[in-house]
Length: 256
Length: 283
Image 1 (cartoon, rainbow over the protein chains, first blue to last red):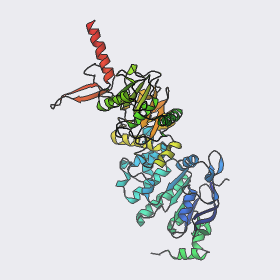
Image 2: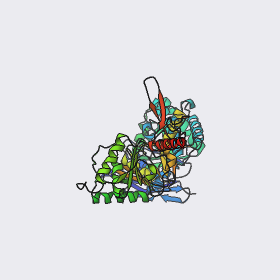
Image 3: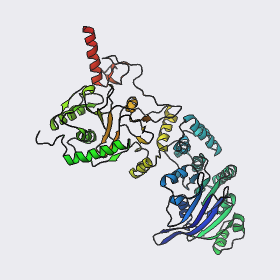
Image 4: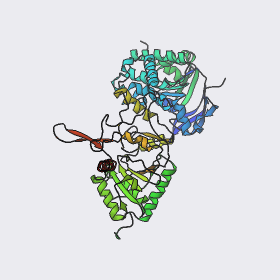
């Protein structure tokens, strides 16, 4: 079996400061990988390096492309990388404003990726947009409303619909539940869990919220100061943390 | 006259312009940057078109200048006079007689022929400008053919207005590659861009960009399969002077009581039809 994503010795420095150092892991098809750690531990740097938003100083990111099998995305031409970014990859930002076009209607937001890969039939684009709004539990009557008129939770669900409409195989999520209140978070997590399981998506989820990884992630990496300090199956890491920092992290969760 | 170099610009500048034009012709629809000069007229009055015309002019040329289809409006008259003075070339109002036609906002109704050059004045050369404000990013989008955003704009039009609401400067795709702003011509004129016999040059003075459509270039207006492009004009109207039902019409308000008439925007086309009709009547 070919891994979907294989990361080898990835490092990124900001001047003398280490963003993330010597990260290696393998993501298999259908697997969800969680990356946890406190603010500034290099989680987002790592995610942005994987998704091609940042150029790492060293290392390789191999992705299982449809035509040519495993290829180093860092050695690809910009055009190939952008093509991947709008077909096989998806990126869900923490702040939906970064991932949505705020002055374009909900339908246009969902349809953009379809049109970017060549869809030119208005009726089909619209029916697919309607279908996806329905799947992420947004009232389809609001298809022509701008995201500005949506609540935070709806904006985040719209962002997810916009990303998943082209049937990506790998989803990068950066704190997808950040900034939402707990009941909305719970609904969003429920929705994401359903989508991930039903579509057989692979995902890399960066979060500081251990509940999110407990619900969604199969495997877990714990980062501190730019290094991976522990990794393993989610339940194993959370229930039997080995590294002192992971123990601190797990014991810091408030019990209600 | 002797105080000016031929066609106002010095020879080195004209060579620079010709290089940009040649490159633009070689890559249809691609915006070639050039170092735009200050011209003795304000930006927005056709400084880009004037520079392109100056670079193309030879003493044997016959020049026609139109503004919104008319030969007798301020912009057209001043540019025509400018070239009469600084290049001493023959000028004409008749489309068929001209070898170079500088235009603002229209393509003449009379079909252009091989050997003619049509020079457009362009205010905003970048078709993606109001979708993506960063010039660095629009260049990358052109380079990578990342044109989904343009289609999103058309989608938004249909979602909101039930049709693609763009009536002028309607974006086109050149030879299946670059998306191009055809300058603010009405979309009625878009089909004339396609497979034209004449060379079409576009000059944007303020933005310093030249682009071109060589003769017989495929130019498609963007649309959706189920909302195809239509070249529209004032529906069900005929020109009040020449009776043409196929030309692009201007609506002219004639009094304060709501009186109005529709006349051809192309004055040469209209006048030649009126002249032909009066000859027939006399015969």
